[in-house]
Length: 264
Figure 1 (cartoon, one colour):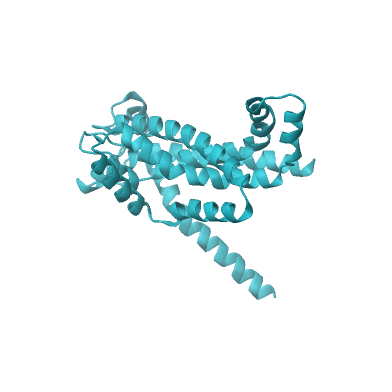
Figure 2 (cartoon, rainbow, N blue to C red):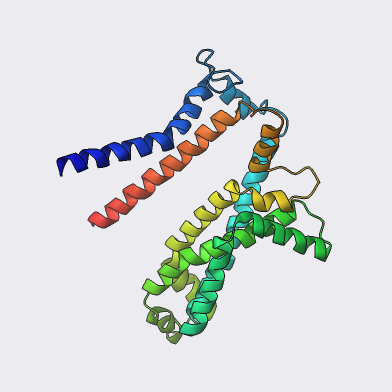
């Protein structure tokens, strides 16, 4: 048993090392001016200065701004539509609910490239000029099923009589939705919103096929084009480090809050 325990712990630490060593390397080499990852030329925060001052190369700051705008707008509308869809699905009969939940899961199982190509053909067939608007629409379509999946568990755990009681006490359907349903579903909505932002920032396939030829770049398409030119902009290293740090802080906060609720 002791040998199995040692082997299991060793395997776990090897797995963690494989997963996090590249991230640690990026963070370490974000504090040097070298343009080549792995070439240490002395400690420096110039890459961070360039990133925040806008001197980080052609298109990077524009790609970052576009990515943030698209992610926030897409996440907001995906959360709104996904929440309403989840409420509608939950109030259907069991057979219809199962069919729609199965249908909702298909886009999540499909590779991103299929969704991207399908939306590309749809926009071409409709004669829609591709650009920022089509990227946002595509990201909303892409993220909405994940919001439905995040909100549904909260609906199943909620007491259905609360909403009906609010209506019986004189509340309008909108008031009952705003004051009863939304507070109950808020944790799932927040999870769906954060997940939508993450998926939007991370997405490449859907963005690439719906951005058109207008020169609009997001972070994923910028990195792809940058790599094809023969290398990556050095300022991407501090950017990746900051993104990782923000996600790490958010996870720590969420886990602390969850731990406090469990203890109570």
